[in-house]
Length: 488
Image (cartoon, one colour):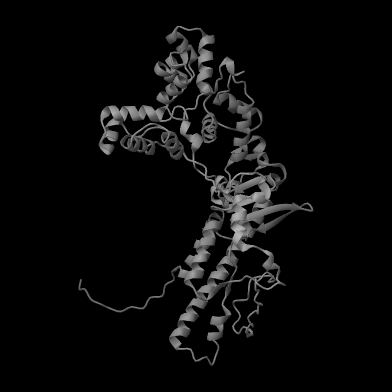
């Protein structure tokens, strides 16, 4: 068969995502903080975009108008100069030279006769929570160490993790600092003598032993249990501890009570991790028996098209064509961005409105009344694609009368119940936690026993499902939940 080249016309259809459509999809799935950062970047890159600082505007500006109304030039505000030296000015009565000093020494309110040099500076009130390393270095500064030993101590402190455990061995300390082996051991012991007790240990066992030593219980039964029988303690096999130590059950329980009062992670007391506060994207308030949806636009710049650049594009302007083309391109980009943001807000509103319709019992009565729901339910209700609903509900939070939840929280798998009734998995987890909290600590319920309780309540739940939900809730197995007698 001979090969030949030929031209052929073919008609076909294909779906192509334009850059504008990709931008709209990206904006849809951004969180609130990410959206604020993206808008700020767009304002820096696009000179046509301005922030609308007007507080009287009732809605977004009509950026789609082809011929905007001409904007009259605004006369600059004329501000009269205020001369401090004039006698009729109230500012003349202020001694600006002594203003900072008066603020710093606090003489107007302290009432003390201390010297100004003894009083703290206003910079001293700027405090920061000390982390573990700074707390230990502060203590180390009071030790009688020479410069070489202090460097070794700083290296050891710098290699402590957030739990306060040492992550390097003696050989690594010697290699990094060039000190002797005796010096390395001595400085490790020095760090271990610092506060909090147990810091500088290599593992949990050594940390607990250091804490017992600090309490004067180095030779106690508690220390023996930690040294030789920690595996029995982890599984709460108190009978094995009694058999191994030859002590009575009362003595073992007393020793275990001492151990449980120790801190297995002493460094976390000085953790410098700051809490992450969630700012809801949507607020849902109940007003006059109805739920009102309010989108949170606080902190988001309100965009508009600069009137200056729109005047340039007017007919009759002597602006070069290249400049006009550039401005026209930026104008189209700005208009599309504003439309995408408005579409994003409308989509979020419709999704939350649909969630309220499906989960009305949750908003009225709480998590226990959460109904099973999937993305397709909301997608069919608002006539959008399921992937769009998935993007809208990602990394977005809603404040409700029942608390603040991620939008993904309202989508749960269904658990079959009696009479064809179905329950949401999240409501099952809430009930599971309540069952465990109400159990007898000396005779905790097994997974099978919990499944039987659910069966009596009309919920078909397998034992392995109970175990899966229990692990998701960070609930220990029944044998590890058993409490000794002293915990009554």
